Image (cartoon, rainbow, N blue to C red; front, side, top):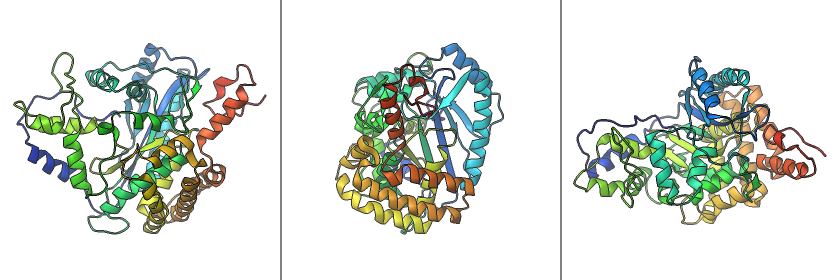
Length: 438
């Protein structure tokens, strides 16, 4: 969520509606052979002695100030609720990406451990109520805007975390690695990724009834801001229309609070007497949160943060294999094609397919069948894209533990919750994966 766009810039020449459409079409899908891969890993930050205890803001501020002195290859940013994010530089291979981010995470964990803090991998904080850590004009305006639709937006801002995989848009021409195929596949395979990696069955200390509460929160928010555009027309036209018709979250100002308009689309703004500038268009796009966001490359935003120090590597490796290996891509396309009918005409993430993925994970038979095929295809492709033995073994272990059994990481947490009901005082170990037994 911490998009790197300046908070406020001096207004320059206004853009017209036609110019906006042309700009969006030109900059959001940069085609060519898939060469680069990236990942953004978000983490909840907790007290090492007990994840249920809130970390005082002054301790977070001191820890983050120290982290910013580290010589990291990844960009380090902080989310509104104090979650930590590392965003890799574009990597030329899967192993380059894994190696770079792993080294950065080792350095971050070591520093935080000295402060008595730890990183926890979960899509939604099981314990903490949404409380904002950052006080910045962007997040002040975002909170006002999202609160109009309900409490889900504030929870998303302050207590959620994800693994976001970034892929090249693909070739201009048709085919397994073409833009059109990759755009469509991202939205259909996305439901399988939601189900397989669901890891957020709790919020506010209670079970929610969803394997991915984080995904439920996204689907419950304003569809114009968090929903996918139509898949029935070409990606460039679809996304350009989506950007124009999406509501404006805020109008930035050099001083004081930013204006938060109501019922103003970007298209409306271009037709007003005070139309937006190019910088406003760039900023507007950072306030849209669809499950797949085009930013020149494709940003897949639907995967919950994963448990364990290296759990994030598995969704990165599986996704890279299924998108960048032509044979695996074709297998994945055939596996998820039948799911498209179940998705229906409603855009993700609100359609029946994505709802089932978030609610039941791989307990859903059709999603489990598709995941089984896709993970097998990924396993076969990993050696071809240069994955190390350790990465291949991690994917195989995840497949055996979850996919082959119709389970997801949320089911482990649910099992521990049920056991801790019989174990007084045992709930502090829920997030770190310790097997709590009566």
